[in-house]
Length: 248
Length: 343
Ligand SMILES: Nc1ncnc2c1ncn2[C@@H]1O[C@H](COP(=O)(O)OP(=O)(O)OP(=O)(O)O)[C@@H](O)[C@H]1O
Ligand SMILES: [Mg+2]
Image (tube, rainbow over all chains, first blue to last red; front, side, top):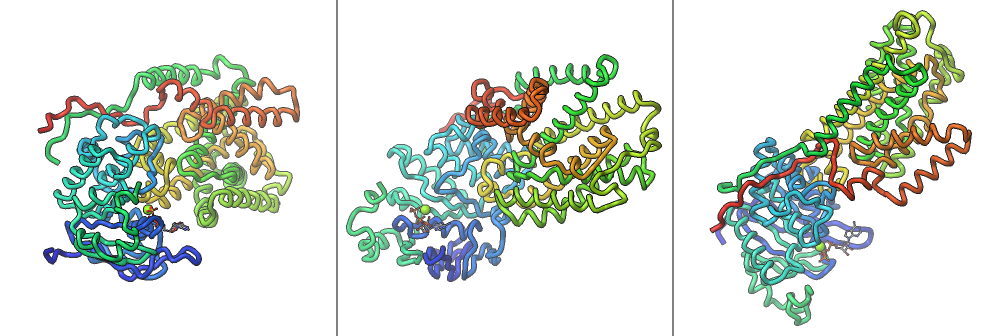
């Protein structure tokens, strides 16, 4: 990998819920334009890591840096405006608003666009993510898969420099998964840096160039995807079963 | 991005255009009411207007920003007392004092907000109530304002409003109509604006709003203060009509919060149309149950429970489940003119 500028980093970040240490002295860096994959068993602290990056959860210790600035104390809305777009693993749609309006919130506020610019941006994102036919549907009446798609689209509407994707490929057919991978490749190709948490490893490795493994809140392995998947640590966690099967 | 499908965004719908036309006719009828309605009718209409205004304001606060206050009577009372104090002792024209009452309510809202915004959910609700009770007890101590038994608006102040009783009552009627129209217009304009997107988003998911760049704390604070301002204004109007004020009447949780919540919840919370439906139902029930005395409140409660069980999103929610109608078009519909040829 070329020595790209670091856009996002976590430095020795820890977070506990009561006695449970959910994030344990976690450090990571994301290069500008890089796509990073994250795997790890259920409850390992992957989504919590996103909350720490996006600001929904404050760390007990450690710091988070974005674009060279310490953002540890920054509220989530400012992190979004700065360029961090996140999707929720459990979708949080604005149920009473249409799909189009859901995206408009991101474009108008996170993206800081004018009404007319926001319309353009949202139509482009709807088109790119395949949600255009659903534009005027109330988000509350979407299926789970559509809601996950909306999570990604809404994050994109803010025009993020870093996109955080949390398990958006689960439950898709092979065909759908393939088109999702293409979409994410496009987003990546347009210059957006990505961190993608995903149990569907074959989809993940089609996009990312580096993989990290999280277990009990700590990073236990990191590197080139193939090498990581074959490492002893990963084999031990998944006890010899294929990771794709483990996700089912 | 380069190549996007041609589109247009439309905001009005057929039902909203019909709604606007009906609204205009109703408005003309109401504006001319002094010439065709009796004294008692005018009084009733004024009451309907201020309840509708209070309901729109509470709906904005609780239905959109999720700030479920049961202490809005604090601002009704502050508004009413400000009017009485300014008019009786400050020599301020009562109509001018209405606007100042809003300002005073907003000024008091700021420290109140810093206190109650630390509380969440039910604690917030109780906190707002406690603050309102503190105001009530506080005003009962002010002997210049009549202490616990309150005061009447001095006769010369009453005379200064307009020449003669009828002229005064007509004037108060039109002021009430203007205030409720302004409240509705402002809420509507707000919901259509950029801030309206944020408010509706906060209504549906606060964490997601924040993640998409909405400053939820500031949005809630601004709405809380603005709603306090307008509630103070309405409070001043209420007691200008009554010509008498007392701490128990001014800071009544029953009159200025319980009934208002009833109106919003049965009409449909978080929808601008909800309070309109709710206020109609409330006054129809009240006229029907007028002879039942104390039973009236219990009947009202029973109606509220039944409606909440059958229609959790209120009567307006029941209607919109069946038909896609909106009287006030706050939505943005995307009309895609052609899909581009994807290669
Ligand atoms: N707000 C909270 N309060 C208490 N415990 C929490 C909270 N949020 C998460 N946890 C716990 O922290 C642990 C890590 O949760 P997290 O959602 O980060 O895991 P994950 O790696 O994303 O798992 P999954 O693959 O199932 O999505 C879990 O044991 C979870 O129960
Ligand atoms: Mg998770």
